[in-house]
Image (cartoon, protein in one colour):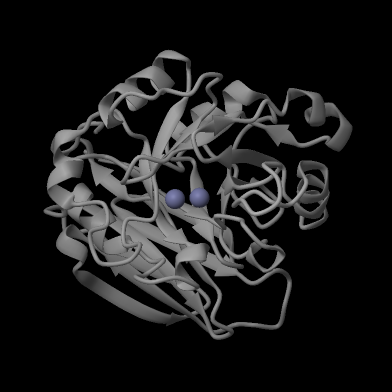
Length: 299
Ligand SMILES: [Zn+2]
Ligand SMILES: [Zn+2]
């Protein structure tokens, strides 16, 4: 029995809340968050964002006072910064314990956890064996823009496919990891939430009702009679050539198609199928997987 995480979502290029959960700001000169919070919020708002977390290193930034002023959903959080890093979102307290304690603490406070930049510095900055031993995380950063300026790789779909192939249902997230102005608006999540309430945003996240983008919007995602129909779009532009890549267990490319729509009929033996779209102008989109629920558990 396959599950489509977008089954109850309203999909279309006008729908969804643009979100970044990895933003350093407001911690003063010479630090990662050297830009002022109000300037950063204003810039994200200008760029069309509807959901943001200021996630400083081991420091919770209470953004409640800014929420009404900027009319943007602000989830409190921090970046747990013992190596390897994690984003603890929608919580109100920093945990100084080990990784598992920090995940448990964040969940107990009603929040969720994202493993950060899995390929920073080198492949497996987040060792796959370590991931196997922790429980309760919501997902991982499959794309972290900042790491493209540093060593290693900002792309971590290899880690994602490893986790998924082990039958653990982790969602893929995209982040700016904002430090400098030129980091803004590079990779984000589009949350297909029914409202802007904190609880609706979180429940959309936890059920995988969002996708990752570096510029593309999801126009259509239908899963019917074991067939996936997907189309993406770069705004309302003239661009018509897209590459649709259907990816399954161990990151295997099951099929790829070119044009303005991708269609994939599941054979029935897949554990999961996820779709990546690459537009002729280089912008990209990653969907969450359609998955066989008999093969999966939450991490
Ligand atoms: Zn980090
Ligand atoms: Zn960071």
